[in-house]
Image (tube, rainbow, N blue to C red; front, top):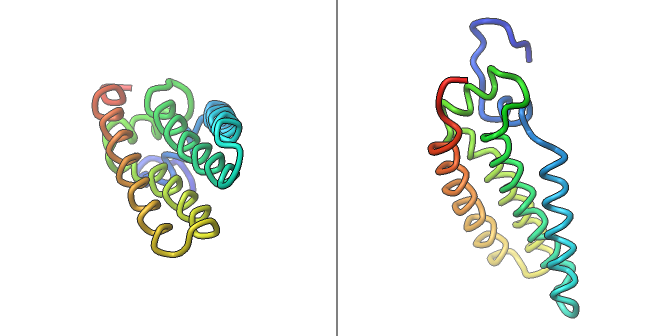
Length: 137
């Protein structure tokens, strides 16, 4: 995708251009490891993975909206359309959790876990973007 004048941004383009990989991976790995250690026994791996995926999407999306780094046009687009931007990390997190739950618990629990995660992440990141991510950049 070129970033010439007149090209419209999409939520995916905006998210990939300002995604804070260090923060997101750090938060996902830390919370996943803590969850794994706290839930040793049955289901520990699935619990650790889902916790790590959730916080990867949550922290990555929040830092992307708040941070001043990355392409300024992508940050401006994300600030102007926080609810559209929030859909990308929410869908990524929900898909990851649904995939882990599919292997651990079955089809219907995976659908409900994925949809619940998408809804929660979308609302939280949309509110963060509305409150803190707006303004002129």
